[in-house]
Length: 251
Image 1: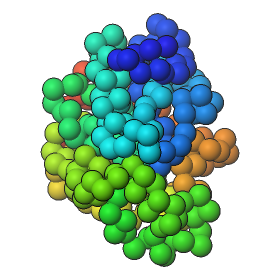
Image 2 (image 1 turned 90 degrees about the vertical axis):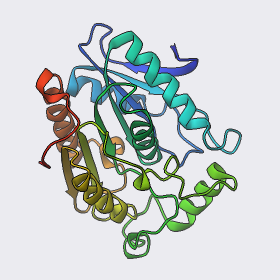
Image 3 (image 1 turned 90 degrees about the horizontal axis):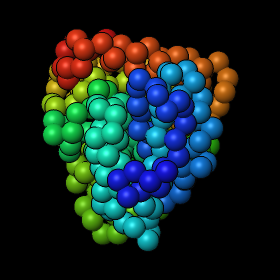
Image 4 (image 1 turned 135 degrees about the vertical axis):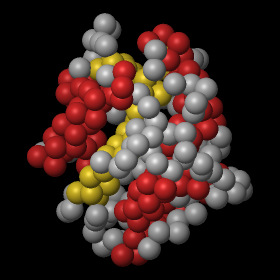
């Protein structure tokens, strides 16, 4: 279907009470809604939600901020059609989701934010790029550098819209963060947790050992199911009116 002028895959019942917009990973230069449909379907089943996965524009043909503009258009249209949504993303899609949430809040109402192994620092400053190089078979400093170059094409990597680790996080909705302690993106997620606490954003976090990058998306084993169950509980709690605020103590 088309939403906000962007082609999207949709999983779940049309009359679902909840809507999740999920932004796929792929380093801003790979990935597709079709490839992420199996995950969207699993997520829809667990959460009883309508899950929308946009085919946002990819680099190098559509460099920064093309993906951000497409994601904003889809979220805006989804909110207009279904009311406030949960915004989620994995890897680069997680970075895109955080950048969009920081840029849109509060004009576009978001119930919550779900970040799975998010890539949120395109300056590649985290020590875990070296510390976890041997334990992360899916992502590396070299691949991250190539992806960032293709996406940014000379733009400042520290721009908060590209590296939302450096964004103003004070207006974020309740946030769920899941990261592997074995992946190269671990340290930037740990930095994000500190920044969320300082911004008084209500946060739920899981740091899973010995699992790969974006394991909830790629796997169907016990750790992946635990992550999906955590998302279900998080999203379900957001359905209550008293849970729609954007601040509070960390969980």
